[in-house]
Picture 1 (cartoon, rainbow, N blue to C red):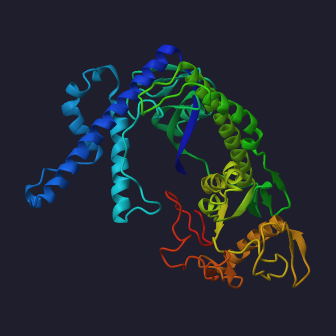
Picture 2 (tube, one colour; picture 1 turned 30 degrees about the vertical axis):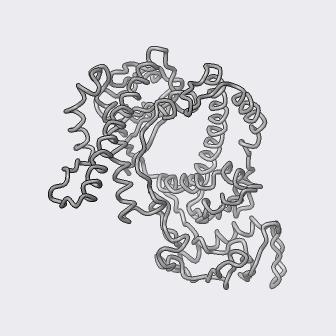
Picture 3 (cartoon, one colour; picture 1 turned 180 degrees about the vertical axis):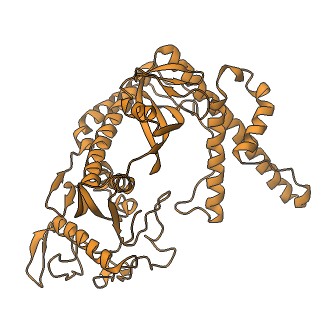
Length: 459
């Protein structure tokens, strides 16, 4: 099975190498801003000519927004715009032009309805001080050295890794991987290199192919499994909140930049901002590490995994819980399970967003009309079942796997009655999954994802 996979490693750059990488990132920014300025100038000119009554045939000739068209225009003008162009790799300019081409296409597709999801705004100019430095290499010498502690990139030469690249090197030595591109980026005060690799993965089988597990994510516990296991929520952001506040107060006492007066930030402000950035990066890394370990274990152990299609964006509107929801990473759990299930030969089932997993009794199937968030135990009035709210939801999710197998590839019969989603709000009629009219909340799949929102197979 061939798949596209990323390998990310931290770099240990010396001052000369860091200046070289920054020069490449600056070249990408220059090319992006020049091309964007030209596109805007042509668009504004054509719009002005239309107001004068100029027919479309006589309007100023438009320019191509494709990467090939932007690259052709840049190559013709770069000796005048960037006389230093020969000092950096051509991939630096290609990085900026490619980002602009994709941004313009996304904006145009969003306006015409070809792109689903939130509206995409028009691309903006990249700032020298606020833009994350990044450069992408797709051609030239890109390899991992035999010592597995160094990588070689075009024009940048031999760069030292902070950690061993043995996992990627083994695949390259066995001819089961092919490097397609490499991206150098500064993130959280550190430089990283990310390799986009085409990997030939062996077919795998979960340790328990017949096992079915329902996963209910939450704040008190990061995940409650239908097997009874409770995965604690480490709350990395809460644990680091005291230090983040102290660093934030220290930063506010420094002389920062002011665009109104064109005042540049002091060096002490820069050092304080770097300390705060490293603290936030540490929280991010801890969260990412924990989620990867959890999702990898679930995908490798269980043959069928059932999760909910949560409206995370809507949940973040709750100002009392938004920070804790964002810290837990609900959407990241779903995203990682999506591709790891395919890698490990397991099956991912996504329950419909309107399925009342918390309101339904896992013993008799009775459904409550309302269930307050403060009710942490589920009391069934029909059969007398008393169970933890999250464990009951996880059991209901696990039960959907049997209904999915019985129904085959078609939708599962809906369970439950009318459910009021909010006070004075609409009544959410429980319907067959996937039959909600287009345009209503919960019918559009997340951007860039392919998993169906009904009870369908993820692969």
